[in-house]
Image (spheres, rainbow, N blue to C red):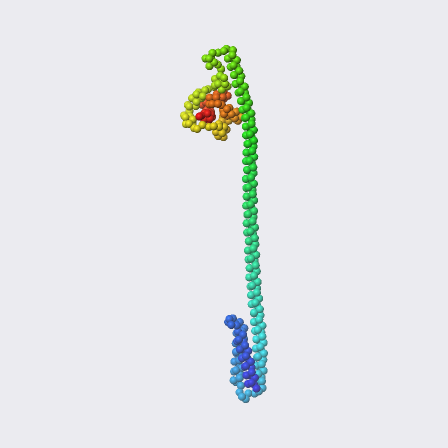
Length: 322
């Protein structure tokens, strides 16, 4: 009876041992408590086998029952140990699962923070670029506004200058017309006097040649230097010949550059632009250089040695140069 019981126990323990061996993981990651359970199960089988070999055919049945009881108790203890080991294994697995879950949660949180930080940095960069673009557009608009203001200012100045020029031209024309009318009156007066004197004295042909000049220009020439006198004085300058070789001009007003115009007005016409314009008109209306110079020196007491005077007279000479 005792032997049969031991054999049953051995078979049961062997079955449990085989089951434990088959449940071992294939990757070789065996927990320490699993190794301890295998060792315990092998020791139990070994003890049962030793005990079985020591039992004689005539052993006392009571001793065998006691031994069987002890073995049963040992089996109960073994099962309790296995249950405890299982619980420990489950707890360890749960701990590992929790640790892995926590690691995944931390990794996910870190990823979320990194993505949020990247989005925030991208948004800040986009805002910075937008602000720079807006500042650039504002600067361009301000530059365009200033350019438009400058153009408007220049246009206003040009318009004011145009109106001033028109007004000055009107004044100059009015004065020129008045001067021309006065000149015509004077010429008519001189002509009338000449006719009266001619009728009163009935001069001979040679005497007529010595009568008063019949034109205003001829009368001016009596009190002013002749063309030859003026040119003779100008020729004293070393560079006059090369200057006179320049080509003639057809419009005196247009030929005089703005800087020379300012210089002539300031130095020759006492800063009076109206007198300057009247003189230019008078020169343009002259029939020849002789009449032009006579008109000039009849109205202007200029020093023929003055450089500015020479420059002005050179232009007058070029105006009538053929």
